[in-house]
Image (cartoon, rainbow, N blue to C red; front, side, top):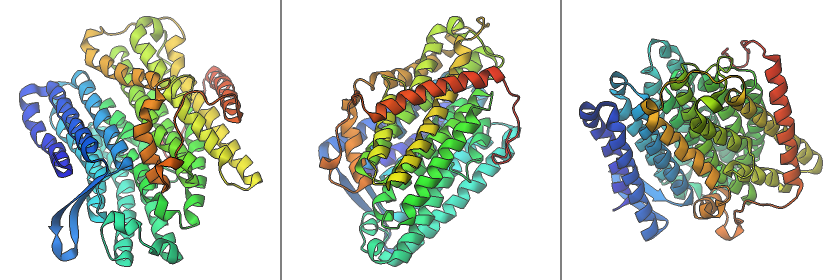
Length: 530
């Protein structure tokens, strides 16, 4: 099986989805999940057989454009996330959906997965751009089909992300003209990045703007809370493995070349940290669990963007591990909130209480997701957070600037713990409320449990992720894999651990204090939403 066969099978899954839906209705999710697992299995076999590999198939020979595919460490990591989380979300959907709503849903979700897989395996700038735009189209249609109230949010989402697509198109055209090739690997290795500062700066800014629109960075962030009109499976996949992760992938992909421009780290670090704090501040204000998670995604992506801006091997190791940690806890959290809403009829924190006694197992899984998001020991989110702190402490910043940036990171970590605390309060607070029977949402519970327990298990077992993380981090940092450190749970009693403990204590105190105030939701001018 070749890479083209892997990608072709992913698109074939989207083509057979309408037929599966016609006969299996909402239970077509099981079949599509099985097909995505099959695609993942084939990808693993190709990677095991040949390691890093590239394939070229003619497409537009007159313009030297080809269907170039490549599997390297970075593409492999994202492909595993895209297919693995995609399969779990499909299983979840079999309980979440009702029969009429499944029409077209599975087709678009399978196409979403195929477009993301094409994006992360593309080795041609034109193929990359086409796949990028396909993810935009899939997300727009998935939001749009959520109901009449979704029209305006879907349109706003499309406008922002399509503008980012135009920015990427500008970068693609500029790079092809300047380097003389659409071959992505060759273009990124061109001497033009180091010998032509004007080109490097222009291309870096265009790529950064494209990625920041997709990954909801300030000032392009308002579309993401808007998109919460979409059903829980769409939100879970969009936030954990698709759409917003496309922006992170693009930054990691271009980082070795674009970092030749001095504008690149300044733009990413400043924009990422500001977004991380802003998203966290908004998250602690809302009472809708889904909007809380939307703002938390904005904040978490800001942390990733800033790490990519630092660009050191340690920072890229933290970023690539956090891609996995974020995929696990964010998919578990969104699917868990969808499960809470299905069984209680609401996702408003003011109306929820006593979930730990009303539905103990499901509540425990949401707790695991929240703890991993907060970076609590011993979950995988704790490991990635410790690596973040270490990356900042070891970064080659001038002393005063390093202290300031690390302080901003600590503030973002405090806010992360605060909104994670707010997420978990309805589970423990108050008397148990009435909930719907478990059997009607069994597949939802199984899906949430799978990713939540994976986040717990991969904390102590984080060394098993080294074959995924270290090659990806080496590719993103542009260094040999020998310069990427090993992964481990316990980092010792050091400054990073002390900062982490301080953030947890302060964050819990802030979350509890803010909850006692119980402020009414208000419209914040910067967000554009209430």
